Image (cartoon, rainbow over the protein chains, first blue to last red):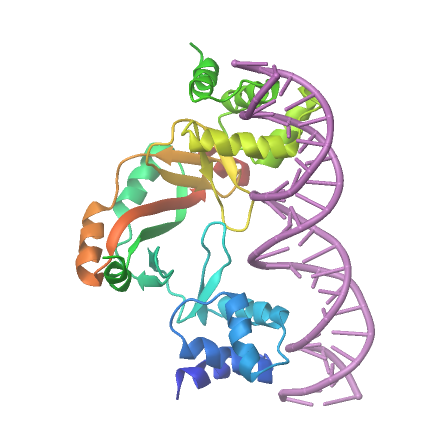
Length: 143
Length: 143
DNA sequence: ATGACTGCAAATCGTTTGCACGGTA
DNA sequence: TACCGTGCAAACGATTTGCAGTCAT
């Protein structure tokens, strides 16, 4: 089963309808492993599916995210972007050059979390860890 | 010298004019150690300074931030908020109840940073670390 | 057939900008 | 007196919502 079909199955078994628009969006997301904004995705989709609306892209991406079928990356002061892949807990490594976002798992700051709970009285429920830098490809372009 | 005067001096020596609006905004920021949005700050200021414009609040906060005299906290999908205090590198502890943001310094994930550089080829330049939870005060209210 | 889904337009929210006036240095 | 700073209104970009028509099941 292709990842494409897998997502469509999850959609169907969660009780949602498989419309041509949803199929097209899922296909586009699976075929591109870099983060895409709703705008960019919509523009790309227009070539093959001229009748798809930007709002539908927003709604479908939100839906897929809620089902845990893709994950959202929200930069400060810019449009959110989405990337295919299961939404387990992870952290981000963001390239300032091309905007690509690499996920990595593990390395959670658990000891720091306990220390902070002791020092501040907070009950800590979650955390975010993000690194910014320049990916190998963009380092070459810089020179 | 009060913290209030200290900021005003920095403004003046950086070549900016000390207008009544800037004085009012600085005073309000210094007197409140919880993060405030431009909107909220503007509303609060209107009681004593009916002629101040929201745009001026935005511009003044931006200016103070650029001078490193206060720091901005940008939550996802919500208005930015500002808090008095010098803008040294730090991390955040955010209360989901009252929205307060506690800063803490140190504990930077430097080893993880080097490990990631080795594994991914990124040149890492910065990072963000943020914990979410419930502060002591809000835990009591919950019960 | 019926309710979910879609597309359009319009509304919303936070923030920024153009411009003419007013006040600080 | 020069500009810098202000206020207003309007523009802006991302996202959401109301609504009437359409389509998957």
